Amino acid sequence: MDESTTKQLESVLADIDSEKKMALFMQDPKVTDGFHSFPEYFESLEAVKSIDSVELIRRSSLERSYYYQIMKGTRKPGRDKVIRLCLAAGLTLHETTRALELSGNATLYPKRRRDIILTVAINQKAGVINTNLLLDKYGESPLN
Image 1 (cartoon, one colour):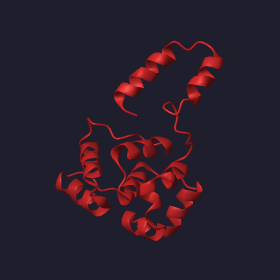
Image 2 (tube, rainbow, N blue to C red):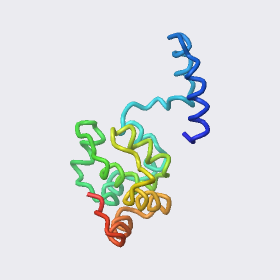
Image 3 (cartoon, helix red, strand yellow):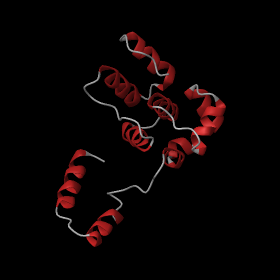
């Protein structure tokens, strides 16, 4: 959600003083996207649907069993694992941010050097290997 939309929603939310109004507000598709988990969201994206699971596992360099545990919801992926999957699928920054939120991980922060590099890599659709090379070039730790 872009900043102006968020500000508009915050303004509307500030005037809500009843559960009835709250329920109506939450039904607005601009407010919530309806996803409650990372796997549910991730697997719904067109970019992910267009890639075979085997290829996604290869591109992300995750262990096959770990990938399937994440997708079944039996393992909670860490921040770097989510970013690996998003890079492997070629997701946008917006999609990656939502994936991080739903997985319970911190979103990319524009004042952190490593996160700046990761953001640029996502925007470039750099992939995991090229992202790690870029991180290394600037003395930052690779995606683990």
